[in-house]
Image 1: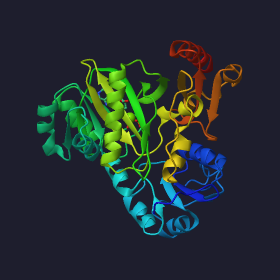
Image 2: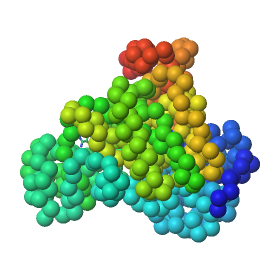
Image 3: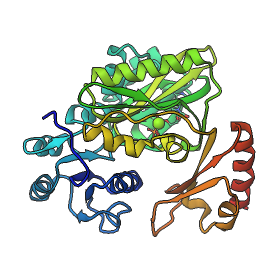
Image 4: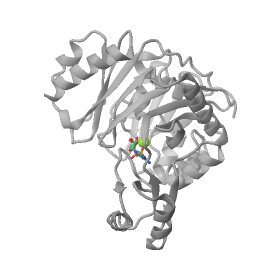
Length: 375
Ligand code: ATP
Ligand code: MG
């Protein structure tokens, strides 16, 4: 199982969203064939793959077809059932493996694993039933954030907690599903590290991105991040330790908070390329999607060096239909659209990368262009 998978081979991806689409584009330009499995007949990645297996992730016959067609299979979506990955792994290579996804699918498992690997999560307490509420509130206090343990994304399934009563109400509102109560951190800066690792254990980190969220959704990522070199080195070391502890193969994104007190806290990880790594498409020697291809195919880690300061701006369905000339009229902006036909509020439709001589100049352009798109 150690030989490399060379161009001409067929790569599979579970999940047909924009991350799968950008993976397909990168892998195809390197000469690979692509098969996407996704239950949506209209998926962004399915539309551009060589083949789209339109089926549920639990459909064993469809999984068998995917395994039959592919030399290696990866994921772009962390909520693929572990049983499906284990099923595929009986007949083909699957990276990342079911264990990594199972850990990332559950906030409490993820935080406990990160802590064991030497990272420091924000203080948290698992709440499985009403009986846990008093102890959780006593240990975490207020302000806090209640998050559903599974299936949260873009800040969904979260509530701000100010008292034991609001905790009780919020837990009921979430339908009594398993949750974690987290201390609300006084955040100075949010950064993320994208680490790549192949089956030989060779790894490399992309430069830290400094992330700004609006309404719980990533709005901008800027690189270089305005944090000390010691802090980015520590974050890189921690992200690499996490990948090693998981014996991870593929792309792993690790989100951190830097608190007002200067602590580096682990927030969460994503076992796939990440929105905050989209800047790599235009501002690094290797993009996170080429890197994903390299890692699952057992190729050397691509050069992660930054080639230009950059600010990435997300475009959500709220601002549709934009006047594209505001973006395309600027020679230093790269536009990326995901081919989604329906624009819903909050839905990620595309992003643009502004390249400039400094992050400050890139931000000035990004802000003026974004203001025109939304006016
Ligand atoms: P995404 O899918 O966008 O990564 P998510 O739904 O998994 O989001 P989190 O990353 O847990 O959610 O939280 C989204 C944002 O909410 C964080 O990036 C941060 O800005 C804020 N946030 C989350 N947890 C805390 C916390 N404990 N203290 C302060 N702010 C927080
Ligand atoms: Mg997050």
